[in-house]
Image (cartoon, rainbow, N blue to C red; front, side):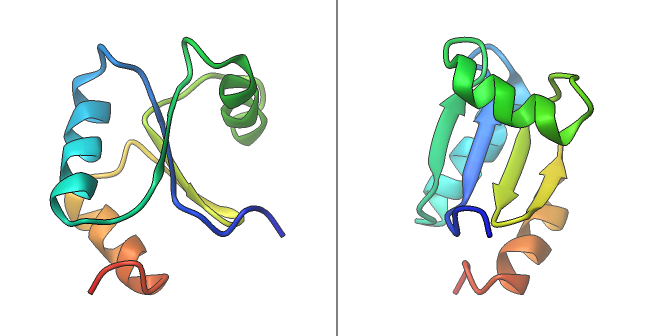
Length: 85
């Protein structure tokens, strides 16, 4: 089983990554934030999910992941994993 912690993979210039990051912070949800352009290990983890392609923002938790989720989809994901009150 993979790490049971919420991870956000994105880039600083990516508005969607910033939007998701700001949402998670505003909800006081703990997560690890990875910049796939500066962190080659993070980029490799994302590429393994998408057959070698670098797609972001990507949210992961355990073995599950979301590509470019809307806030409503992210909320459902967080509630499913009991990460949101």
